[in-house]
Structures are given as structure tokens and as C-alpha cells.
Amino acid sequence: MTSHNVHPRSHHRRGGEPKATREHTMRAAVLHGVGKITLEERPRPEPGPREVLVRVASVGTCGSDVHYYEHGRIGDFVVESPLVLGHEPSGTVVAAGSGAGRHRLGQRVSLEPGVPDFTCPQCRAGRYNLCPRMRFFGTPPIDGAFCEYVVVHEEFAHPVPDALSDDAAALIEPLSVGVWSCGKARVGPGTRVLVTGAGPVGLLCLQAALAFGATDVMITDVNPVRLGLARDLGASATLDVREDRLADAAFDPDVLLECSGHPAAIGEAVRSVERAGRVVLVGMGGDEIPLPLAHVQTRELEVTGTFRYANTWPTAIELVVSGRVRLDALVTGHYGLAEVEQALTAGTRDPGLVKAVVQPQE
Image (cartoon, rainbow, N blue to C red; front, top):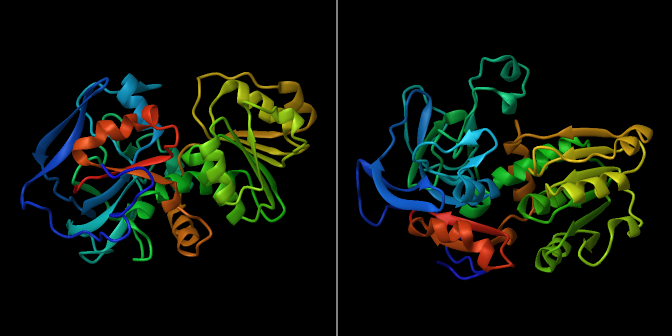
């Protein structure tokens, strides 16, 4: 494992050959039950029609990966058979199936991990993130990217320039959550934004809001390390809610991007939103939350959920290439494929953890 805040491999590795050539197999970290991941040799997948085979370089770990590891389910999604987790991958195209012609071999890509059916009413309306037959990496029963190779439909392998590290190319996925959320909230020049929760998604919502033109962005959390990083990333104000109440902060946002998923935090934050403001519920908390309905009604607040993203990769990539969003700054540790369990449990050992990255070729 690479030590905290050191990223020697992510900026310079651009693929290359595996340490040992195995033409038809690959290693995969497989979840076999709560708290049990084993490293296995599996058949290397073959790309089907319009699919590409991608040699995985970096995979960000996500709270949903941790939740599956710790509990074996998220809501209606239950792990009932061995599953490979990981849905934030980058890599290199090494083979193409029939009819696939978008990429040259050797092209570095950021993978959009959900492939819809392309035909349902939601897909035809451009809302493919709501496709009821979505096949999403690392969501039962679909295997994810904690492995050496994956296949994906060519339309969901997005080319990235060499200016982006492998880690940054992987983290286009959580950045897309921020881009989608800011779009749902109609963040623009002059918008005042409150972000509750300074985890990886909250920090990316912060950066996306600033890139969309927000003039003031306050972010709240209970972790001083993450709040310090938020200040470095451009937050106009931070609030440690262990010590100070949001109600006393005299900040009346036009937009709330709720990334904590904490019921008590949600209610207090909604009460701070200005008249005719917008509330976007980004973080996944309990199935039900108390909502200050009188405040929502008398201020005519718009309250909406958000689920993944659609058509965000080009914008997200450009934001990183332009320097308006910094992704490598979020990476606080690297792990090899045999260390996936350590990556998923790193937050319990390191209060300064923001984003652990698995490098399957290590």
C-alpha cells in the first residue's frame, strides 16, 4: 500500500504490460459475504458486439462499496452470489468486439459504469440514468471493476487526454455526481450554495458549483481535515457542525446540495434555504427523513432527489482538463488488488481519509 497522501504511481503510469502475461485469465477481488473478499483467478472477459475490453488502471472506492462489504445490501440491492465491487474505473482499451470502432487500441479512457437498455421510455427521453434495466458496475448481480480487465459498451468508455492521471480519470465518475447535482439545482453565476457533508461527493459538489459560477459556497462537516481540504479547494466558508450551529451561521443559500444523508443535518439545512430556493438530495441516508414541510411550502422550495447522472462525462472531463476541478487532491491512499479489504476499511483507521484508490495491476 502507498502511504497517506502519497501518489507516486497515479501520475505516471499509462498502462503497460502485466507483470506476468496470462492470456486468458485475470485476477479479481470477489466479495463472498459480509466482510469477506478473496483474490481469485477468473476468465478474462471477451468484448461482445460494440464492446471494448479495458485494462483497468485505477478504481476509486465509494461509500456504496463499503456498504456492500459491511452489510451485503443497499436497499433492494442484495448480494446473493459472489460479486466484484468497484464502479469508478479508468484504464486502457486493449481489444474491441465486432462493430466497435470508436477507440484505437491503447486509448486511455474513463468508464461510465452504467449501461442502459437504450430503448425504454426513460432512455428515449434522455434520462438513461433512470433506465429500469440499467446494468451498473458493482451493483448486484453485475460485477464491477476491482479486477484487472472489464468490458463495457464503447459509448460508455470516454477518451481522456494524457494530462489526466489514471486516478483523475477514474474519479470522473464521482465528479459526474457533482455535475449532475449542480445541473439539477440550476447553479449558475451568482448562486449561493450550501453543501452539507464534506466527503468525496460533497467536495466534488463544492468544486462543480464553483465551476458553474457560484459566488459563495459554504460546506459543513464534522471532520476538520476534510473541512481544511474544502478551504483549499475554494470553499468561501466552512462550518464544523460539532462546534457551531448552521442556524447561527447567517448563511441563506439559494441552493442546498445535501451530501451527508444524515436526517438531522437535512432538516436543519433545508430550514436555511432562501425563498424560492432549490434543495437537491444527493447523499443516501435512511429510507425516510423528516422534512420541515411548512418551511418548504411557505418559501416555495423545490425539493428533488438525484440518482447517478446522464451525459455528464464530457463536461466533467473538460472541468478537470481546464484546472477548474482538482481530482488528484482527493486521493489519500493507493492499494493493490490484494488489498481491497484494506482500502474499504481504511476510513475506520484513518480520520484523514478522503478517497482510497485501488490499482488492480499492482
